[in-house]
Length: 88
Length: 432
Image (tube, rainbow over all chains, first blue to last red; front, side, top):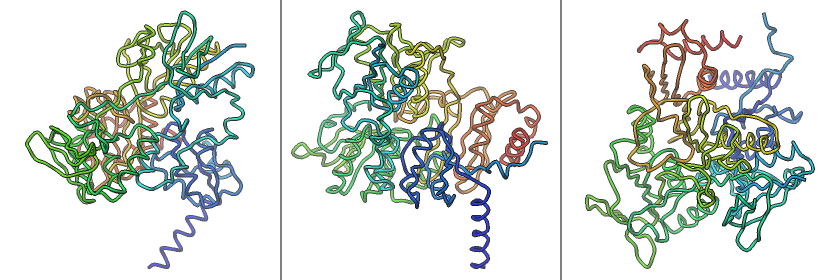
């Protein structure tokens, strides 16, 4: 059970890594810096949020730490252009 | 060369100098402020108290970030404004002459008039130094009493608890934040805080703060009960810092009155952020927000107009996402009504819009911590409260701010329906 769970998480994680990026939304961000403080590789996520720019840093692991820790729900994953479905 | 002076180092002021510089690379821009810590995240102070971020994380801009703004910084308290001479006096720091001026002086906690409120140990959470003071006092304290309402009071409760104190929370009424939350929502948060060890005292008013050698030693209620504590934290609301504007003869009400270009009654003086009270041309109504994003946006709009680029502030649906008692909570648009006895004015991190309950049907879907309340108008959603699971937070923000026509699902929205799924499906189809 435990192994299945971790495998499922792992595959979900890989999918995000392959298809997504982190997008900040200025209207929710209060620049508290919890995102930057918790980024395991030190990306200044807060600065991206101030500028209203996606986290397009090639070092970003899309680990989700900033997304889950943000107390204002100001960050979310978005599919990258390559994986967006075409409009009907 | 145009001379711009911006008073206030909060987000409205900084957004303004950012915009001014982007419009005019030759202008002389001076930022004036009396907060020794300059520009930092005021909402972040709550997370500093809970220990989620270290103190230095509160500072937003690095030296590198300031460089391209190429502005002069004068630390000092603006003491007098002379609109006729276009001059601003800054105490001993001298006098500045401006062509256009922005007042982004923010808001301050309403001081308590309770006897003993001037003693060491009575705290508020307005600025960086307040947060530092709380952390420092907590090292030598065992108990604290929090008085007030709204988000800031619960942030104080949670912060003091995280600092290891026994926390009592005094409420004048029968429940928490009654003009924004409904009874279920209040009870949910109260229950969570009680589980964490917070002691609620409903229908309780403070008669006097008791002291020893000028330091807080306890608190006495109007019922005659005495509680020992070393800290009394007050969160009874904020008021606009508009003394400068008032003395200069600018039009003021609850804040400095502006039109939708953020221009005050003096054509060369603008106001933005918590201190501004924007009058909407169409409705004639004016509102005050004490929220981060509207402050940034009004600062930006003011700066465009100061630089001669005509732009109007379109007030969006007020939204705040906060964590209350560990529960993620999104408040959008009109959700409550009436007054809150625990607040004497608008609370920090709040909007007057939230207290304007429209003529609507409200309904809720409950589980243990997940809670959804929708305020439904004739053809659109007017407000929503999302607690716990935040899947609907984004879709509802979208639907409410775009005033989406919900006629096609209106008949499905009734008590007992799978509200979450209906809203999610509707939104998904809309954004496809």
